[in-house]
Image (cartoon, rainbow, N blue to C red):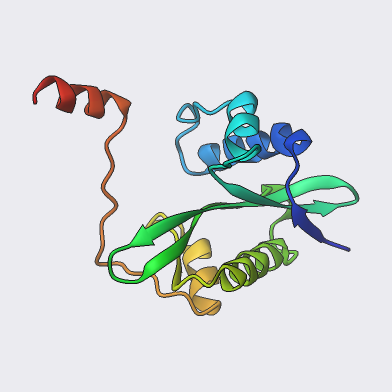
Length: 159
């Protein structure tokens, strides 16, 4: 099975969104995805893209994605954030995640980042094992903190 990893194109965003939705179902948040194909096209391409996306193909079918963007760490400087690495459930176990992660790490290295970071759900043991086998440090003593749109509006209204 030949796996081709390449930079995503605007025309790939329908397939990218399909994999994002598949991930949301896997992560038990089937109704959480609000982003649209148009959002992905507008935010990922143009003069100042908000993200960079790699796609993995088998026989010209997109079966995996890795979506990254730059962040800044007050401790380290420029870091690359891996928002999602998704492999279609039907294609897991064929090395697609490895070739996508390889591409992300090479990309981060060429950018000269001091760190590549991402989150993983604490119950997703297959992903945790995969990342640890690749040399990643899964920091189990940190909690992810977020404010959704409703929380932001509520916060602003109480200032």
